[in-house]
Image (cartoon, rainbow, N blue to C red; front, top):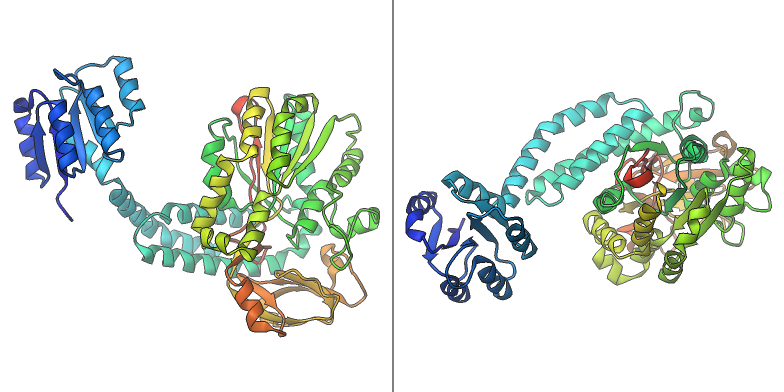
Amino acid sequence: MSTIKILWVDDEIDLLKPHILFLEKKNYEVTTCQSGTEAIDLVEEQNFDVVFLDENMPGLTGLETLSEIKAKRDTLPVIMITKSEEEYIMEEAIGSKIADYLIKPVNPNQILLSLKKNLDTSRLVSEKTTLNYQQEFRKIAMDMAQVNSYGEWAELYQKLIYWELELENIEDQSMHEILESQKTEANSQFFKFIERNYEDWFSDEDRPTMSHTLFKDKILPQIKKEDAPVLLIVIDNLRYDQWKSFEPIISNYYKKESESAYYSILPTATQYARNAIFSGLMPSEMEKQHPDLWLNDTDDGGKNLNEDKFLAAQLKRLGLTDLVWEYHKITNLKSGKKLVENFNSLKKNDLTVLVYNFVDMLSHSKTEMEVIKELASNDKSYRSLTESWFKNSPLLEMIQKSQQLGFKIVLTTDHGTINVKNPSKVIGDKNTSLNLRYKTGRSLTYEQKDVLEAKDPKSIHLPTINMSSSFIFAKGDLFFAYPNNYNHYVSYFRNTYQITHPSHILDSESVQHWIGLIGVAGTLVDIRFA
């Protein structure tokens, strides 16, 4: 490692000889000067890694010197050292982007700690994170071998995503590879768990909250409290790791009370999962009770155009006929900005439902646009792109206004995505559905080892398009491809983000969905994610 070069600026530099000798024994190279003017000249002439700057000097003050240094080398860390504890000096220094602020007299260990914090943080954090994950690895492996309930799988999922986010900035790629192997194993085991248990959830009393029970189980209790108007935000296609990437931004306005898991229905495609949320019904029930609103895969027309009508019917069944509510779907920047302008009018509602479609459009754009493929080439960059969008989106403005108006926020998603990598051949007739992650149709031919199959769709409350129709769901990171023009098709869709379902616990919502209930006056009430 190259020697770290320090510039120390103090009009009483001779009194600091013991500190300088201490640093030199630690292999730091220290250059000294006694005025701000001299310091500015040295910064122009040489490259330093950090500057120690006395605040109270004759001629140019420390704050004035700081301003000049930042004008010339904006990224150079400056550590201010002062005798004064006056608040305005601290505020000025912090506002000028100092790296640290030390009060005289300082001891050598304080100096060393500040250097470590500002120059060596990345390495130290990386080493500590790696060590912690190495210690955690065996425990995760043991948990994976024993986990056997939907609650335990949700906890394991959270733990793996936590480590994925912790490890994403470390340099040791071997740790990433180890985590990826654990994720692959978790996905394999979770697939078997869903295969064994999913159908039984519709008859067992011990079952998780699912898409069609989400509103009744989690949102209705918040409405009934009547302590604040409720804003339900459903971000289409949002993954749990994406939520964690912009959660810190929301925490500036709302404090989270809890996070809890719910399980998506199969398929987790928008037309099934989101319609189930708003209707409070499984797809076969929607088809039966609302034939005028429900469309199957093979029917022409938009599949998600009646969410408000489904919600109206559910509210009526729940006895909420007097509830004042509105439904809004945001599909572009213009409609988002328009709602921001009129947001104050929503205060009169008991419930406002907001469906936000940007993340869904982002995942589709990765398939179709080369520039998005470059910007979201992997999960880390996909998270970063989502965070950047959120910071500059009308949605953030709505959350800010919600906090000002005293709304309680419920934040959730209908399904997530997975970066698909491997094809699985499937053959069907011309009426077979087009989705890459699930298929429904007659006489489907496929690799059994690659799928979760439902030969009798009624058993999992899915519509039967015709007598011989079945559903299949792709395992892990597989996607379905037809034999015709196979190579082109595979090349086009490989490394794109597609919907997920219970065969896949990670890199997506899997069946694990989360709902965020953000409480009144900045308190988050009961959060779930996917």
